[in-house]
Image (cartoon, rainbow, N blue to C red; front, side):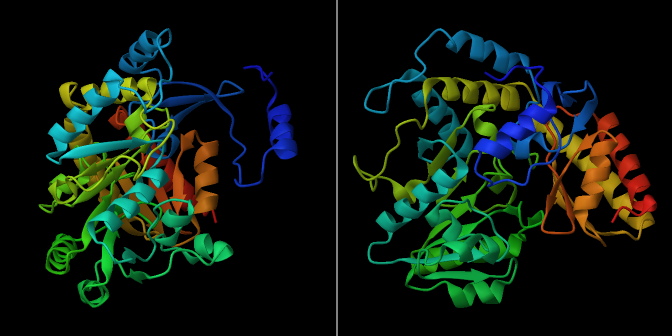
Length: 398
């Protein structure tokens, strides 16, 4: 049995011996955390600007989550979806009410949410199978989700995948118009591309997508798995765009750290999904749903979404100022606390040096520093990060 104080060498050796090599692990061993800080096996403290890839929105050991988890620990951990359980209905009610959509379906992850969305769109568009997605998009690793992921390196080892998928460049309205027609079942869009480099879709592009789907009968799906649930400074990313999709997929922060995904459907989908059309054994289990309710309590009643909006606006100005004075910064993009800093060099060496300096960050594509910090991160930590980044760029990490 693994022990909390087990050596890093032993942990790495066991992983190398017994785990499939699906990940290029970073030599970082987080063992504890509180707020927006992580502590490694040697006791070194780091500011976390990645949040488990946008999962730990409330940081670590958040009182609401700890309380909810302790309360659920002695209750039923699983009952299956053959029977009623209160937490699932309560979370669905909250999400539907807050989003203005109609229904919720719970699963375990973002890729499962997108798989479900593909199937639900087929129900709404009988006889159609065409799918439109964006270049550099990311929708998951399962067969259907990777079929609409606009990165050839993720798709090509597993061909053939779903046929009839067309990829268009982000924000290219004319290309979108050429791609969506009477054979299109659904259009999948991330309002802000995450894996693709933190690329926001323009209001014009989103409005064109809505108009095209209305004209052709296609289903408009917004993948808010990475950019949703408060990260943009709005509870749902679509709420800042003026465009309401037919379907929203979400996951990452929803379960407070436990696996939980969801599909929210609008009126277009009402009455289409019947028993047996789709399902899951573990999706929406009682513990994950209770944590989901705690997350929403903190985001809404606790005022955390408003804090993200305020901190995000301040941080955006600070990043823009960095770009003006440092030629190594090519572009800055994003909203709220989903930010991308594009560099004139590969991002991985910069990421490694920042880790050495006590900052956990992500990357996207080859040249983008990806920032997805917990919503509880203080401004002082973000200022310290920018100082460390500027120092690192001057050192010439490359």
